[in-house]
Image (tube, rainbow, N blue to C red; front, side, top):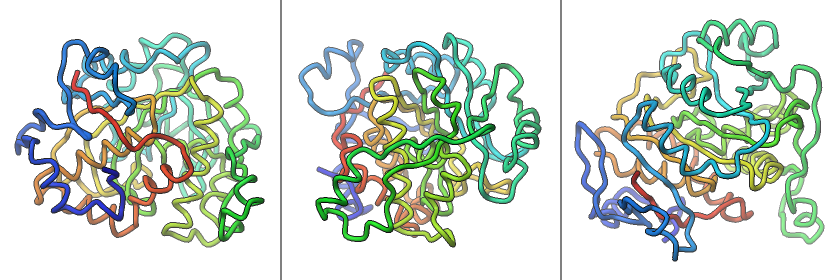
Length: 343
């Protein structure tokens, strides 16, 4: 079953997920799959015959749990490694604990945290004050590369020009065929997309796709993705997906994804005054498939009790956020079908 905007409703999802066991204090899943959850000491054997994407899950939101789950999805991470984070506004109220970043980064050889300057009014809009914010938020333990510090390069969106030529795109002026990214990105061999999963004022939610679709774009790239006047809705979401596809394709075979479902406010870490979370923390997800990990993250949010998920789901649906998943599937950026494997 494809959990997209057309088929995902709270009622149908709860019926489908009747095998899930949800606690108000801790979040756990027993015997449900997807697809759903497989719990096995030998996770490779558990999914060897499946053509679905593999998404690994732990409810151990600690450095130990994080390092463990990363070990399941790091095979292609070689050479010089970019760790793409959203490092947040100064003193952001819902940022991930810095130790969840510092201790993982220390285990990844030849790794550098990477960011880009932002388009909205913020000290992160310019490189010098962006670096001050990094210091304020505790990013003093390793190099941080602001990738668009010098200039931009253009990354093509796979297949987009052909789709336009073939008439498969109804309104080509509303889509992008290439996106400007920070030129320093070309210095890296691999990328870990390390994402604090949460709500977002324009995208509905911010997962791995948003982290690279907006976060890797340079300031000029962010303008290309947002469009003039910053329109919201499906037009913006599709350009964001196209931008993310460009980065995912550039690092193809050498890009992997972690979503941390903790401190999940309805607001992004780009909001210095983000609302307090109203739902419990869930856990950490990891995958080499960008669509599968964002789909699984959404599915787990929708499995929360109504009183916990209400605010975040309202933010997601009011911004048509699930269209991210629909469009990723449509243009072939990943696999919506997945096995959820507890580690």
